[in-house]
Image 1 (cartoon, rainbow, N blue to C red):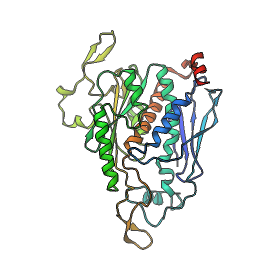
Image 2 (cartoon, rainbow, N blue to C red):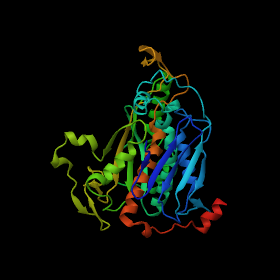
Image 3 (tube, rainbow, N blue to C red):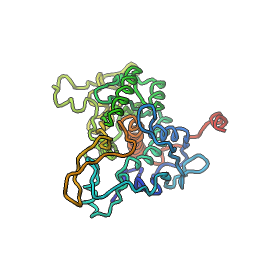
Length: 376
């Protein structure tokens, strides 16, 4: 079982849902980069969710940094972080009953019955904790270089938010990256909350989608064919549990379009830079960034762990039996998934940034004296 990813930075994650710890190690991250722990802690808090509209854990996920960070800066050594698990050793999983739409059955076949699937085991969404930690670290550095990664909830069920426009003002980026239910439209947010409350009352769940933008990445990042930027982004995003669809720019709608309607013509912008008059391709040509915002849509399936009774096969008796969740469940993954996708994308962009610039070209980022005084 290999749970590692990356070319120029290499991420590995470890642990099981109900094991003592989960964590990760990030290799080859540049030295001298300031670690904004406040931003990381905010990202971890957003990942937990909010009791206002989705199930949230009451215990804070606190990172313990084992190596690679000293006096607030990266050292160049592998960065390892772990998260202790207050639910360790809970015995709420019966192997003989595979949960509908979970990985129980396939894990049992793949790992010959030895996989720890308590709470989802190594397939659990809890394994996204190190992804958020390291993604926020990358996002902070990229922001210092004028590159921002931002996401909002595109839809929950049939309730849609406004789409990203041509402009990405800093205040919008900051608001979306700190909101527990990140929407561009306040009205859409209200309707999403109402929908989630009604879904919760019925013991059901619902799917949702996230729209992510990478803003400020210059043209020329990425490589063609197997290591193109689209394939790298997709591989990382599809590692997030419950993701079932990833699209770039116009995405699946390209299948119904004519070439004359969706060609992005190159133009000279008012500021003297080259861009395109439209952005159907989502900022990518040939798997390489073209300088326009990279636009990604990620769809999450509804969580199959719901309070309604479902049918499944009992492996011991070979009979169909009733199954239902006896604890709180997540009505929709999208609110918590928003920051996870932002983090995953930031990791990929950081990897591409290092490929394009080289390790030795990455200059240290020093926090200002005013910032130090503010933190103290």
